[in-house]
Image (cartoon, rainbow, N blue to C red; front, side, top):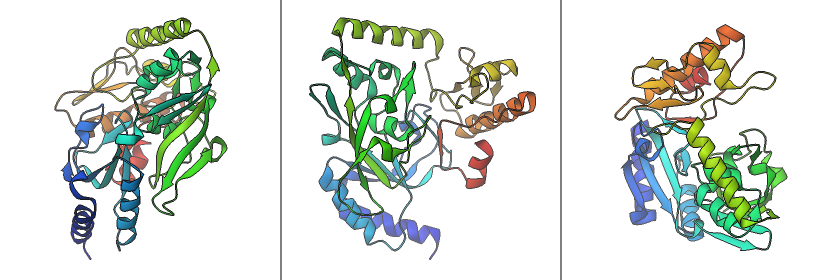
Length: 318
């Protein structure tokens, strides 16, 4: 069976079983904050548990399963110009929710972090102010243990609700310990869909919390670029200066390669141009990594996920 035959098989099968929520030839690159890159073979919006149950049943009957990608708000992805030969899943509907019960807050996976942070702060709960400056979804933040300003998801996350599409359709509640959270890492894989999670926060003064969030937003505006980027490209190495410092010391602030540029405002950001090429961003990431290694002997690893590139290319870039 050829790759094209396999693709046609699962695309037709999911069109039949999932109906109008399934789309062919989806513009994936456009749904990322880089806004470059190609299209995905298939896209499916999931609005509730019943959609996940149907998807699990449909996938279980396929001889060859498609690769899966759960898409949040696209703020941590670089999609190859050739696109992604697989199925993109996006949560909506009942997965965009927030419920407060005392100091406990349940947040749906598709809710935007800044929106969640502001609603939580308005309720007089403290500990999630940092999230107001992170343009991702709650589920994506769990998957990468997102953080900033001295905190991260691990600091307040108590449990997550997941479905493993490679196993049982049963909804599971995982304690934080099972997530194996560390700096920009978790145990979430492409087959595991985060549906939401529970935060445990502290009481505080809503006006003070509002002021702290305003400080976060102002700091980010002053120190980080806007435009087409995916935030910090490289993980800050342990026992070495931050990645931005190393990149700047290597003389790469403002360095340009094709349609991609190391940000003059923050050297750990790479900017893409409108109608630019994902390959330029990828090649610049590799060039920065190699230059820093040669200059300082420090091996930088990427925070962003690279989707649709060949395995050897991604190994080169990470």
